[in-house]
Length: 112
Image (cartoon, one colour):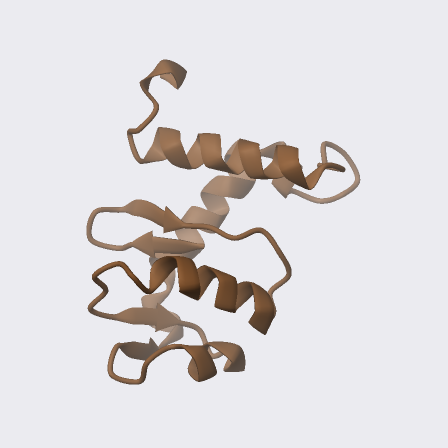
């Protein structure tokens, strides 16, 4: 997931494991945006795919994305533990996340 820290909006999201392949998919979707800085934790895969001049590794600077991860788990039961309310269908998971993102970014007024 990528988030605009200034406007507090979702930019893009890719559903998948936390690995290099999923990270590359997200970076390809995001890199055409006008980005001044990219803040990440110390996961090694990021270092290889993001341009050094905009890349900053700092756990202290990832609070916005952590907040949005928490929001996903709070609003979507299917993002919690797999004992109850989990998605068997990846397609429905994607739709649920996209609806939440559209609502949080004020693109979808019918959910209010």
